[in-house]
Length: 502
Ligand SMILES: Nc1ncnc2c1ncn2[C@@H]1O[C@H](COP(=O)(O)OP(=O)(O)OP(=O)(O)O)[C@@H](O)[C@H]1O
Ligand SMILES: CCCCCCCCCCCCC/C=C/[C@@H](O)[C@H](CO)NC(C)=O
Ligand SMILES: [Ca+2]
Image 1 (tube, protein in one colour):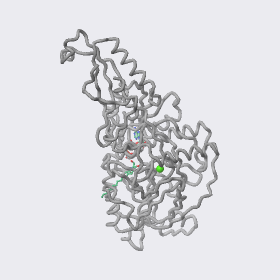
Image 2 (cartoon, helix red, strand yellow):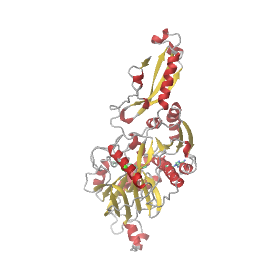
Image 3 (tube, protein in one colour):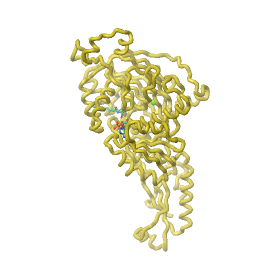
């Protein structure tokens, strides 16, 4: 047998499918095969790694004269594929037709469905008809018959699917999500993201690119990447879970303004971003947090979280030991709280780097996907020019934490109360402030905002400004593997590569 092209080397874990190939007349009449009475052939479809973490489906066809030998090869390779137990066979797919540039349906039909079908993955597809359709559906569907759930859309759509799955599992386990100390049950069913949204930060931060074909291939090969999830409560009421950004001030205001401009598509964030930047509002409040002492890294590390990350693996071991010791019981947490009062332009808590096409290294470049901590970034009141310098550093290689007005902490839980709600609670209410306008009347140009901002929770607004947040280590799983280190050059091939078999 002779492979075409020559020297093709593929690990079995990256074979997508093997199929018998019907040779047409033209193919039969080329090269040495034209001398054969009736050549037989099979095609191996495999993952080809291109630049910038992009994956493509490539193929190579093998020809031979012996039909029996050809069938043996097909059989042997199919058996190898059957041995890849982490690969999904049956998936539930939710498509948001209105996310991003409204191309979710065509992206799925043209780029993803043909690959799933090639890899013999069967699907049940739901095109959502309204917000929360996927979430509500997940609360009643028989999830046990699926090997994973796929969402086609942006961060908001992922958030919806994640809420449906986590909520379903807590409901089935009799856990009350309103109890902020409840020992939640982990979600082991994997979620795949086909990016078709406006920011696609969760996809970009876990795969390294926002590209539907690459994501589909990570699903097909059965990758698994655990993710930290933060639970957000207001007193004893559950509000939401977050995996990427919980942002108050700048990112909350952008989101609130941009929601009214959904018709603009992804451009709405640029428009509202510019407007919010010009408004330059800051907010007063108190942040209390518990530092994450269990994890080895720091937000100022030079190294980033990559596939097989050592720091995330350590956290996984700690989590397993903790489960062994306490089971599902909640361990009382007596660790110290640090308290910071101030005037902030932005308070950002990120469970992952939040890298996205707009900011390729993200809001916190050294944050880890699965270490059980979030990076809490406090941007204090500063001049517009300094804030611009800070924002610009999200787009280049300079250190965005190297400013006197920016502090960053790695935390396992935090709480925030705005000055306004603190004042209201202690009954020092200034009726004048409440009745007339939102801005400081004594200093109209000072940008001090006596109204609250809004929390941006993975692209959805929260109803309350006072929140309590707890990070749950490796709480959900994605069809991803984290960002590969120089994926193009450093591909490590397994011993079971088909080249050995040839
Ligand atoms: N059929 C639908 N009609 C209206 N809204 C929907 C529908 N299906 C889902 N949604 C809601 O649309 C919201 C936004 O969708 P999505 O995240 O896919 O796009 P986006 O906001 O443009 O992207 P990103 O979140 O990456 O910025 C989600 O929160 C989801 O609840
Ligand atoms: C003048 C230059 C300004 C450049 C500023 C670039 C900063 C972009 C950073 C984007 C961070 C995105 C974090 C992710 C948030 C998502 O959860 C959310 C929903 O998709 N998206 C937004 C924009 O809120
Ligand atoms: Ca983390």
